[in-house]
Image 1: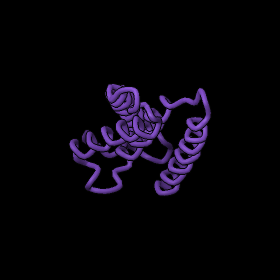
Image 2: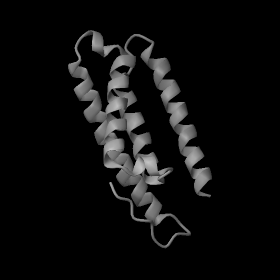
Image 3: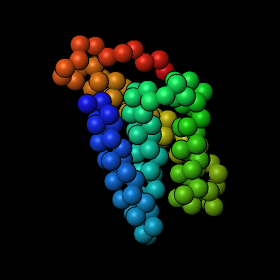
Image 4: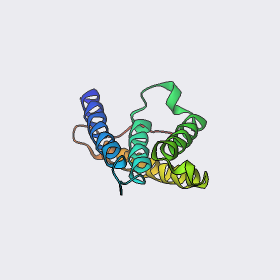
Length: 121
């Protein structure tokens, strides 16, 4: 059941990201939504503990920074200023934290589970 929930999350994330990328190519698109959605996806992946690789704090921080810088480049904001990378990185970090907390809480209260495994941040 856990693998099925993971793939449902990945499917929803793919739909959101693809619709967002479509909207970013149009004038007046929403480029600030991309780091938020990807940050929420990262937060969910951190709770899933898919591999030993994702358990390290520095690995998680590197992924969040990579998402922030990548969204700055994809949206084209770097042409104006690289300061937008700071904003996108902070948005991705906050969204990853919110996604982590929400997924941890939902994992704990899901039916059929007594307690959730402890996840170190």
